[in-house]
Length: 134
Ligand SMILES: [Zn+2]
Image (tube, rainbow, N blue to C red; front, side, top):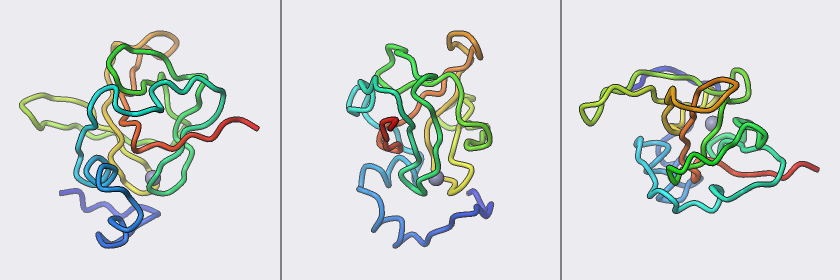
């Protein structure tokens, strides 16, 4: 289990009060939302996607792309906002990514994305909230 201390920490009861059951399952129990289930997948406006757990800006819409996977996908996070760990669950070796501020699970990173980074941050939309650019 992850024992790191993050700048934002909450008790389990606080997390359950802040998050919907689906958000809790994804962000605190490393769940995965059903592909195509999140409206943010279709969000095309300019703006910023922030962490539902702590409000930290995580992704900019200009680095979002349509990956065809059913999950919101990004080239690159806001610098310093996301941390990666190696995830060996389900018999696969994947790179897990989580919020650097509150430690909430966001999704996984794959190396089959488009330029410029070649990375694909495959993110659960429920972990994000979108704010259109002013
Ligand atoms: Zn967070």
